[in-house]
View 1 (cartoon, helix red, strand yellow):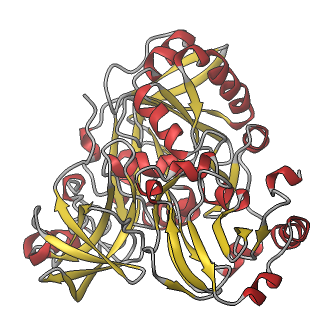
View 2: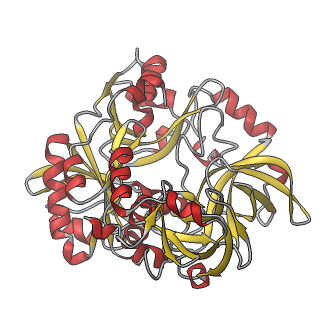
View 3: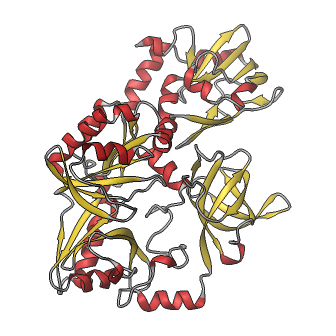
Length: 372
Length: 131
């Protein structure tokens, strides 16, 4: 965090007082005062999302609108994925990159209509992203940073769709990465079948002034579904089990999507960073973002060094853990980290220096958790 | 308020508690430490017979979001270890002053006991530092 950011008091979402009233432990997350857990604790909140339904305050995330007759071209200029694949009501996950291919952010793009696009970006990068969009495509379309205008809630878990369907006036999106608009308690809401937990669910966008009432309604009507409010602690254990990257931890401007395993969202034409990424793709990455399970005890955490294993002892340091924690559903401890490509094959066993104590990790392919 | 910090125990600045019984001291972590850590998922304790030094690290406790060192309130020899905590670390969350005890130390220098805080002093200490 910059010195300027740490000198200001953290920002609050419209739901801050509710978190405090619910007994949340609040931390400073990228300049935002956010709940890391409520009274139940991280493990219970994680379980609630996997087995019932969890409610997340994600109002801190950013919302940007791109509109005008050349909006499609403007959005394509700044994202790596293929915008032409989107029809009205479609959403797609993508990166936005620098000229050298470094990842500026990961985000979701929504096509409202041919002239109207909505981009939901990370909280800590909202202003940076908006400046990046305007710098590279500001003259061919209208860009608006609407983050202060919108509130955003995430409702995730096997019972999430049933709960929201009960409250919504119209049908919900029929499959993942589709979105639409409906009314809940007389309030127009954008409903997107997207999430960050590996469960089915929806994200709800509406004017910030109305998000408190929707939060209250969901917690109240969600009681019979077993709803729990869920903080950032469980948000992290859930997304890690689903093997989803966290910008700032796993991916950043010093890494490109190809080496981060995100080549599948590099499909566009005419975007910033295209030459660098096509070159990276052709040459093959020298390092890769990999997933791992810890053997036995020990938790490998962000910043711990990854080493070769020399007969069970830590050898040469070769990489770093970028995310790591206990995995409440799959068991044990899991994580993500950067290693040289020659050591990145699934099944490879490496060591992690856990504050002076060695732990053994085994690299695994794909998500650690998959819902049935 | 002070039922959070039992009067019959002594306390350290690192949020450990100590139950003094003759020349033996049983050690655990306080409610304040448990609240800060959240769900405890692992605890690493020394073996019986190991020596510990006052203010030295004798183990670690891991929660979902953090790892914390455990500091010995007194110097001496570890004479008992609460082994079941390895399989059930959540016991510490449920009952940190009784079932969640961690080690018993045979004290080598009884003068060190004078440096431990009373419950009232510990409560003041928390107000000063956590506020």
